[in-house]
Every structure is written in C-alpha cells, then in structure tokens.
Image 1 (tube, rainbow, N blue to C red):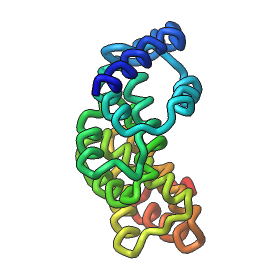
Image 2 (cartoon, rainbow, N blue to C red):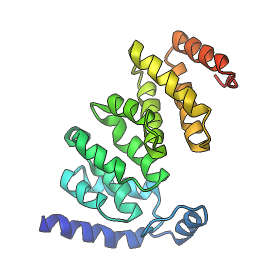
Image 3 (tube, rainbow, N blue to C red):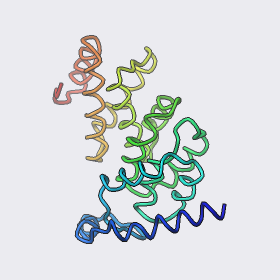
Length: 206
C-alpha cells in the first residue's frame, strides 16, 4: 500500500508538468469546478496512462483523490475485467461532474462484461449523471454492433423517449445520440426508432 501511495504522490506531482492554466480557468468559467484541476488535456492523460499501464490498486487509489486528473486517469488505468459491480456502484455515486461521467463511460464502463446491465439500470435512474453514463455506454455498445433483446429494445426506447422530453439538455443530447446509434444497428431498429419518435411527436432526427 505504501508503494501505491508513493506512486499516487509521484503522479500528482507530474500533473504540474501537464498544467494548462487557461484550460482550467475556462472550465471554472463554465461552472466546472474541481477541488484541484491542473487543466491537463485528455491526450496527455492518455499518454500517461499508456506509460503506466492498467493497475487495479493504483486506479482505486487515484479515484479517491479529489483531483480532476486523478479521477480521469483512474478510469483509464482500471482493468475492466477486474472491476466488480459493487465498485462500479461506488464510483458512480462518487462521480462529481459530467466530464468524469463521460470519461468513465468511454474509458471504462463500456468495456465491462456487464456493461449493458449497468447501462439499463442507469438510464432508468432519476440521477442525471447516471442517466448520462447509461446512454453513453449504450451508444458505444450499439456502435460495437451489440443488439439488445426484445425486452431491452422496449426498455431502451421507453427510457430514451422520457429523456428526450425531459428538461436536461445534456441528457436529451445523450439520449438522442444513443437513439441514433440504435437506429444504425439496421433497418428494423431504424423503423422502431422512427415509429416511436413519431408517436410522441418528437422531431425525427434519424
């Protein structure tokens, strides 16, 4: 554990070299606030993750830090095959921002063996960051050609329609993107999407 703590401190010090004050300031102006934010780019963080390699203990330790770069790096370092569902639940509850939610979905959650189960659980949640993660994960799974079963189809369309009629622009955009990727699975899926949207009087974007 001491070794992990030492590595975390070394990584945190290295962020000073990646610091982009203008980016950090821009985030603050847009209302994106972290306890500590060095403004490091995602490209730089990905390079750092590639240098370090996947590491469960290090990812767990980094996630506990209230630092933007630590949390993003944690999502890049966590081996998906080692992450238990209960740990995912803890991370989701502790997700502090839209950016971290999106990075976790793209870097990690879409690669979990049980990604679809979690995604359907999240899109049915009344917590916006969970909904956001859920729709982003489903978008990635649809892009991989993963087709839901009949129950999954009905559940996805129902939840997407609720989200598309909601007040959150962020969730509406995520749901819309997910619906587009769902339609891309094939003609049957496209017709299901179009029919559902028409039934609820939502502008057809497919």
